[in-house]
Amino acid sequence: MTLPEWALNLLLTRKIIHQSPGRLRLYYPVLANAAPAVRRQVSGVIDQINLPAGINSIQLNSVSASVLVLYEADRHGQADVLAWLDGLTALLSQSVIRLSRLPQSKRAMAQKKLIGFLRRINEEKVLMKKRIVVPEHVWT
Image (tube, rainbow, N blue to C red; front, side, top):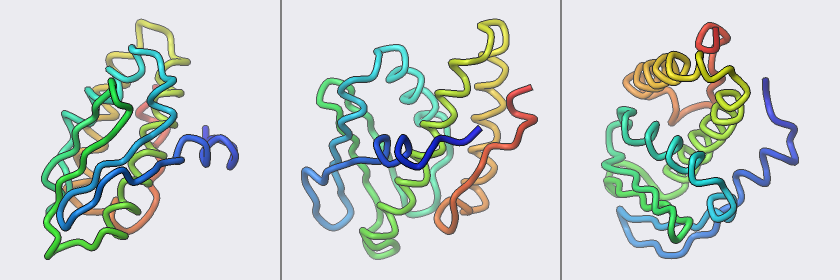
């Protein structure tokens, strides 16, 4: 399942609040309106994935609807980090929607498979280069 273009654009809407070399704080309006359970789910997935080399941390602040990204500025330019973050946001948005549509009895296993998938692709540094689609076997 993929989101329509207009919905994906809405989810990817962000504003840079603060920037300095190696540090980006971004505001995501969609986080301000997301249910607490959705914010916890996204935060839980982010906390468990292996970040690509040069991306040191991602911290979701659900109170301010912001995301703090710390990265190695000598390794990645701001545009590359934003492109990677947009890819991750699109992937997580579609995944949260897909998880929410699964029966409760299947959600934990699907989330575990999703995290495993995200760990593998980050280890291969694929997210820095192209948009990723979660394979169907994760949801079954």
